[in-house]
Amino acid sequence: MENPDRNLKFTVPLVDGLTIEAVFYGSGTLCVSSQAGCALQCPFCASGSRGLLRNLSSGEMALQLTAAIDRGFAPKRVTISGIGEPLHNAAAVLAFIDICRSRALPVSLTTTGNPLQTLREFLPMPHNGLMLSLHAGSSETHRRLIPHGPDYEQLWTVLGEVLPSCSRRRRRKIGINYLLLEGLTDTDREWSLLAERLRPFPELSLHLLTCNPVPGSPFRSPPPEKVAAIGTLLAARGCNVRMPNRWRSRAEGGCGTLFVKNLWGSVWKSAGRCVNLDL
Image 1 (cartoon, rainbow, N blue to C red):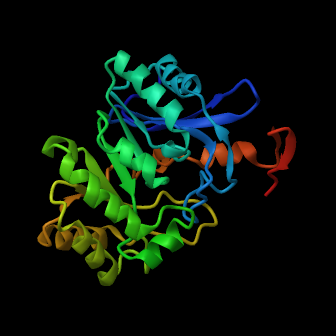
Image 2: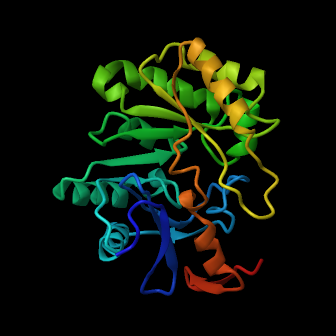
Image 3: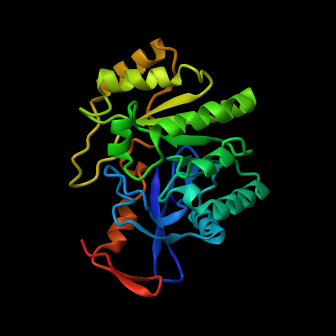
């Protein structure tokens, strides 16, 4: 049995030769992937650096749960927050949520909100939480960090249209992820703009995140004292702030690096043609 007091990233081989990645957190949360690769290719994210290879089936998502249990873990909850954009694979994600609910496992997911029509459908669903990864207070920064994500202004319009019809309890299940990056999203202007955006949505939680280091990446998070100061200032603006999760901040807390490592120097057959994935 693995040590239950630490995070563990592990890979799960698939029948077509692909290898996917999941993370078990010492808090009891299992983070699973919904795709092999990701079409969004956000510049700060390792898991999308090779683009999208294919969607995972609900069975392949459940296989990650089985693999964690086989390693001696007993997940208390599941989050679809690993590799991939869950809304790009909505049917399989919904089927997997049903699988988890049949096992009395609460399920949450993390999404950029793309596509917006699917986000509309997912927001009021009986999941255990939906985290919107925005990582920006302005449209220009959002476009830089999530270049293939939804339109920032339209995303907030969707929230303004859907959330008022949701119960207060359901609204409290929705959160915003905000990745603090030095010189980019840790500026007074950027987080102040986000605080203004959140003013009409007092129930939404704002989760501050910091980077898991990726070799060769230019992105770095500010030092802990600045992270704490920004959290205090956002709380003073009326935001429901959650500080960085200590489990996700650890070295084994980020998804994608093992997946990319397994693709190094490989050629995978996809859609009937060879896709060269050499770095």
